[in-house]
Amino acid sequence: MKHVVFVFGLVLAFFIQSYAAFSQSAEERAGELKNWREQCNHPDPDLRLAYLEAALETNDASINRICVRLALKSDNADLRNLGLRAAIASFDQITFEVDMPLELSLPPIIRPLNL
Image 1 (spheres, helix red, strand yellow):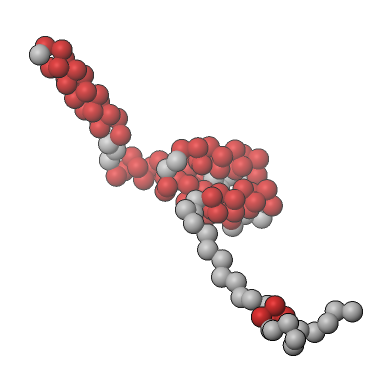
Image 2 (cartoon, helix red, strand yellow):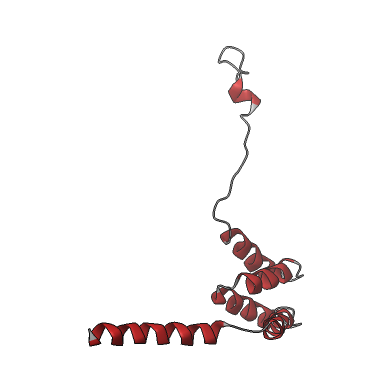
């Protein structure tokens, strides 16, 4: 019984510590997002690329959205490329709508011959 109580106490302590570490005030969160916005909008394209890569590694949806949006608006081709790849990779599913070309939809007798 003492073992169960000890394990329960450890688990409870872990959850309390995790909650305290992850809970932020709105002001702290806004400051963090503002910091990422400034970093991902840095004038140096190489630094912007590094910041974008770091932002994507955070797996934070708000930070990713901020930095990807700024990358897609960039004049630098490498930043736009990475931003576009990150934007596409964020989708769970990509759907394409296609139509049958007229040449393939006609019966074989009516199809034009390619001589």
